[in-house]
Image (cartoon, helix red, strand yellow):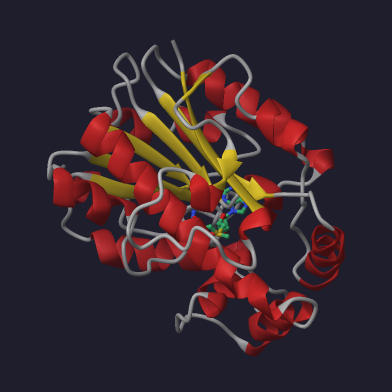
Length: 277
Ligand SMILES: C[S@@+](CC[C@H](N)C(=O)[O-])C[C@H]1O[C@@H](n2cnc3c(N)ncnc32)[C@H](O)[C@@H]1O
């Protein structure tokens, strides 16, 4: 894509991720996550928010690392095994090491990637990272209104929705509250998938006592972070055929040599990939 065809200015006020949304008086999920992952793009308010749940369970920091590792293995599967050449990564987060387009391009440099986030700081950093890249772009849009993602001209430009593509929702749906209907949003995403397309989900799991304690800490300190049951998590894939081994603890999804299959937090996080037939 030519440089002048990509969006080179921040979204206008009123669009998801616009500068008007840039706030430093509330924690940002993206910046809290960056802090927990050991990044540098966070403020005191974000660090305090992180410690609201790290005080409950310091080991919870590992969930963020396991989540990224699951996403990495998922992209390897999608591009390396399933032959996917177009990816929409919703809730992409602040750029870090091993971003989706880097993982995909290491396998095939022609893969198209559209990053989506509603955090203005993510958009600024992602635009800088992708400057000059004609295979990957970033848009400001919101998972709660999937049409803002799928009908965006930049998405349409890079993703041919008549052909198979993959949608990643890694570590985002648990930040969509029940009131904002994450199941409805996931259903709308699934409805947009063409046959042979995939949906990746990873999500906090409500299975053991720490989950409810952590959920309270997240909701109080960060403002979002629902731990959902196995059945609730299965609902995100309704009507899709699950890729083996199905929806499982994220660390047990096709582990590789770098995956800590047994660790202190594996029962707090699930992951899976479904395919539209
Ligand atoms: C925990 S981070 C996950 C980052 C990355 N996907 C990963 O797995 O490492 C969640 C990201 O989702 C974004 N986000 C949260 N709610 C969103 C929404 N409704 N629409 C778009 N992005 C959202 C946040 O700004 C943040 O960057």
